[in-house]
Length: 289
Length: 301
Image (tube, rainbow over all chains, first blue to last red; front, top):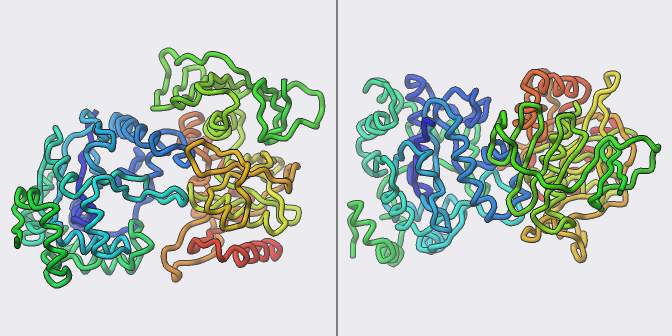
């Protein structure tokens, strides 16, 4: 088994950006296209190492030979590990898969069997910026986003009636989510969104090396340029982006670090710091209180 | 013993299958028999997937924990079920009519499509799409407008003398509560597909019980933006690419038949029908408009 590399993060933390740079990097710095995949990413005929999201409903159904809409939430949670393990056994060159799942499932067992995991790039972002972006992405108020980030038992893409392209993902608090991945017994590379912004080529080169890309700094520079935020925005206008939720007008919205300063009220910032101060300090985010 | 008709097959089952219509045809031997017995794991399977084992001789075993284990013989003539819950529980039929029946189809050279099918005029029209795309809901909208249905969720196709035929499955729709509420169908007293799911088995009176030629397959896709809504006929390789996605449990078909025979079957079907992509914003409020649009498109040929 070659094992899977996870790009793990809480939602709205830069996960997709990293994936887009890697896609370009894999093709020697070529322009990023959202609609150029013919074979599904879990299929052996998919040439790229870079896959979609771990919570894909169609990945689950294909690997398990079953309709997810016939299953209960408990059955799905149990079977997701089985699907990941079975796929890891058959996958070729170590695939790279995005995930917003917590390391542990809601019942406290690892969702990702450690033996199927080769490593994890863990991406974190200042939770004050996450709150603003998460609110926009989910079509909820900033206060509601802050409340979700403090809710130890939240579900992402949970729906009892309408089936989306993703399975429900258990989402603990923002701090709990980060802590779970930082404590996971796997090889790991921790990266901050803010550092990616400040020195994109430097950080992306480290990520590429961790993920066993054989590349040069020149190609990394080209890939970083190809996945520039304004280019991703333009590509979203051109072809749409399938992970954009219906409630949000754009997936690639702003892409800045520290934007919370002109968006959050003082009370909102303080609430996030009260909820997540310990983890923020552990990651080197300055708190105002 | 109970005798039923299912997609053109005569089924003899010790397990009552209330979803199916009773066999009204000739006294021939059953095409498919269903019985209850132990279903131990296969020894040295040729293929082992998380829920499915395939033996060298082609025998398949599928197991859903806490529901049932199922075994299908290599010719798709017999299903043995080992229930892990009361044998009359609907859960057992959910997987029987899903993955297990798909195995039977592939083994018998029938191509199962992930589609719901209605009758428009003297033709069958199929709505395909991923789980949640709105196949059953669209079929229910047609039902509401006086049309009859041939199949829900899984539709069995067969090419006869160059004509693609759809076999009638059974008179039942599987619908989520929000679709039933939105279309003003009563959920009271209906069986749930699974005890924990808000998904109901709704018996249907308007059932087209005879095979019909398949005129069109509509591929349902969700538009997130009104600008991306469209209805467009697919041609050539595009139509074939969509048909491959419409094969019910295509990965299973690939594992049982290999890609050559599977895609040859899909190719014969796609060659005999019109393929249409229907991308729209999901909304029950536009049921009338969508039914009219498709009915007009079909009667205009």
